[in-house]
Length: 92
Length: 222
Image 1 (cartoon, rainbow over the protein chains, first blue to last red):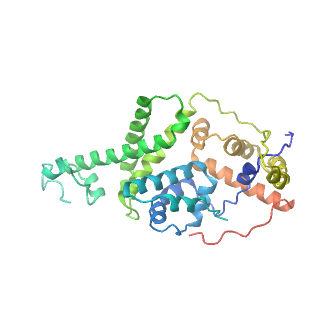
Image 2: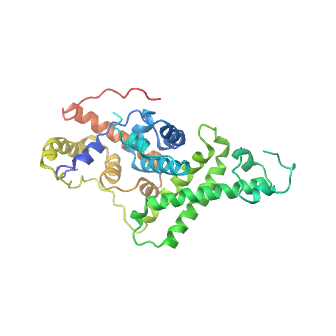
Image 3: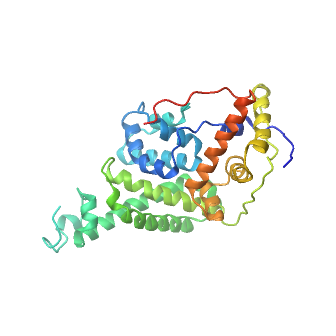
């Protein structure tokens, strides 16, 4: 199919070319996200590259992970910001 | 936690400001007053988490009244609780039970909000790369324009028609993955895998054409 190659925005171009290896499915992410949230809240330097890569490439899982971190932090009287900031780090 | 038959009454302390069960799985598994209490506490937790999620996504539900929002939260809490109970045996204690439970409510509620927000919106699957928006900064545009043009062209030649449609819908048109899954009769996993494969193809094409630097696989996958 032929179409006009008007440039996409830089943000979308980056999103389209994101390296999402190692592959992790959304179900795998769901299985891990509770442990990951607790680990990040207790140690913002904690890392699990596979899930962080998935969250960078899946907007829905990312929203739910951020929400879980925020909610658990709220329930426990913790500051969620360091953990949330960690999610924004480039996983590559 | 006592076993069924040991005490048929809900202990007095449970009827007031009762603490959460020490062993949620046992409390939820064994019929009796303690199970009823645990179910009630669990539902409260799920509803709190669902309301939290509705608040987070409130902006996508402009014009929806508080009563309807509360219905969405309640419905999500109910459905999440049913899902959790069917998976209770899979809880391994790697996180606290409460955190494990909250994720079910958050997933269910986020999915319902996305679907509700798109209830009356058409999802159009197109193979045409839409006209993109240029970055406001001339400098950043200049840096990115070559890659962005190459990506746009690569979508045409490197992807299958199915990958192209799914990728454009999810990553360019911002159709929520749950909404697209529902409309296509598939699931989030399958769509994410399609996008993952599409990204792999796009990267390979752009690396071969010199538009993207080759990067080593990310270390530390555990």
